[in-house]
Length: 215
Length: 186
Image (tube, rainbow over the protein chains, first blue to last red):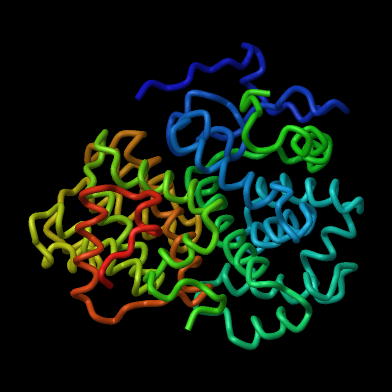
């Protein structure tokens, strides 16, 4: 299939440009090339998504239902936190910062607080239910069989429903996919973490389906 | 027994998809594009990649389901399927597929395990950029599907003949809503 034409302006594609602006505006440009010729300079998952729009559609639809759909008893912030934590455990810089910034946005907390939750979820300022769901996500990250009856029982005792347990497992599993897609193709990621923070309000407003990959 | 209350008449991922149709829809669409697409890699090659990754993830339900589907596409050649499942580098498949299966094996460990030389080897054996991206995404997607199935302790039939019946349904009709709404005999 044909590559998506590179719509980035010329002059943007040579050096890393770490600038950011408050509107979450221009994307910086990459330092390294991906494993394949993506035909664009987009950061993180956007590169392969623009390269392969057919698969981007269900990948984005899945993210929208899991992370943003309001028909859910887990808040958007809680779900983004599960995604962030899994991405952190998978050591995926791009994903943990995109989703960490969204979690921060929804939970109205600062970066040190969010980073502390990633390191020590058990002592973080989060609900007992979420504290019981995050170890399930961590177990899924290692491998599905690591989820134990005791973990499920603990989550239930903190009020988690079947659907919340289902969604926790599927969010963690899905990020074991997204993280591998991003790093397995050696996509690049802006190093400045503020870049992600600046873009979060717009991501939150636009969601995962109706947005322009190039903006 | 599954960790959550699902329809026990539906095996493996089917019970989970039926539990949450909202997520089942994009999951089915993704599987259908990745595994049934005939451009570049063949459906048989795609299912073999899925089978190998699921085997590495020790997901009995998935590696037997996709192994059975690959077997149909390979006209019943289960020997090749079994060889790819366990030791792709000595399997009777093309050098290109061997190189792609090696990339899939790396992705199973983590995305960062994939090295430039793995990509070079695949290219030298004739793989296109599209083949490489499809391989990485199929492997990544099965790191999701396998965790979904085992993370919720989905029902896993142990009788291997039942996988063949379900495989015929997928080979004929693809992935989609029918796999979790139509009751197969098993």
